[in-house]
Image (cartoon, rainbow, N blue to C red; front, side):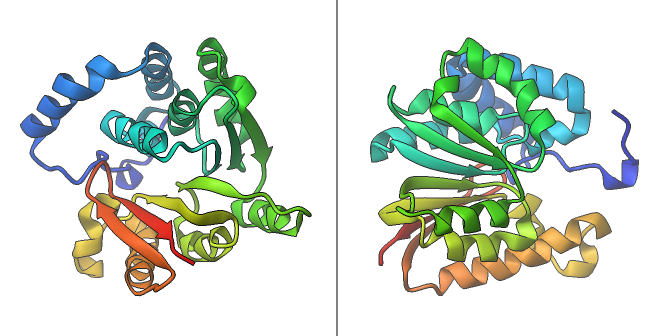
Length: 238
């Protein structure tokens, strides 16, 4: 897959010391990575090249897996799937009767990863919905009874993160967690807009606004985790 060199996605992660990043991955991340996750990661790079940077990095996957287990989460939602690295990570972390509602407009990428999800024996936990994210959330909100989720992972359509947050506050239970990925946006949120590559500015501006809103939202407890490309955890209080 060829891409315009000017529009390449930077290497994922805010950790700019490559030797330290290599140490973290080789010491604790890669040795504990599930075999099917490893295969899925390699297949995604082979098919999508630089776009594979959209997947969560391995150390972030371990973090999300442990978080889900500590929460005893059973019913989760994922907004933005791509080839399914974080989806497979979640499915492996949930109990046998756990369920994931996975939403993405791109079914082709999901189906590429489905082979590895099936090989891991966890495809029965997943309900994939091919849809625009906000439309799918609105449909869930209209259901009677309305579904209730323990955890939501948001990794698609950055300009609509703010709108997704308002909907998820009605779908994730009190005490549950909404996790927004890429909230440090390759470190560009801390830089002046004119210094940011043009193709990265729309998302950078949307995430700057999101971070301000989340920091001042009294309905949630917030933790900005500087792993991967930045993950913001929002624990619903009311």
